[in-house]
Image (cartoon, rainbow, N blue to C red; front, side, top):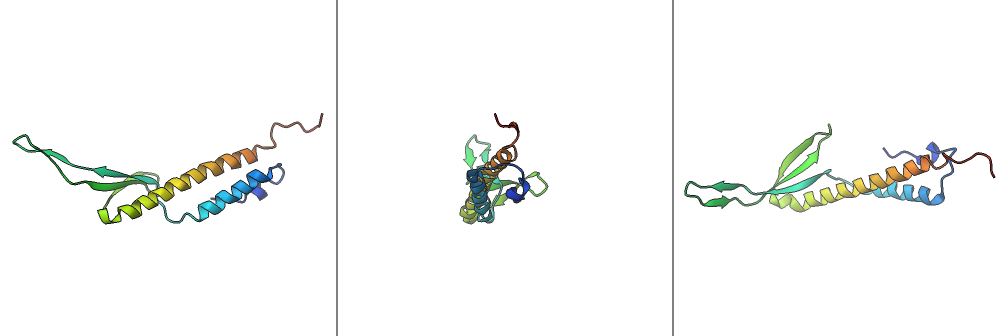
Amino acid sequence: MWFNIVTYMKGNDMTGGKEARIRELREEAACIGPMIDGCLQTKRNRVENKDGKVHVSPAHHQVQYRGADGKTRWKSVPARHLAEVRRLIGNGRRYRRIERAYAALASEAALGGLGEKKTPR
């Protein structure tokens, strides 16, 4: 996924700042570790009894995530694993932020030399 943008951009003039930032983003993404691309949901079941009283069950948690095939999936999460799941979701958000920044910089670098005149004025 992360390709060497410098060898890809042989002919284009890329500023050192963009090149350094792209390198930083690649290193940051490599250090993230395990992650989940999804969100954590807290649910409570509300049941109305025959006498009209409403019973609310204790909270239970589900993680909704994107599977390998791109489809949305969900899985129940026991309370003892909530901290770990929250950490994994945080890593996923961090990765998506890095991925967006990387794509923007790579696009700017790729189009950096386009639209400029070849002859100096």
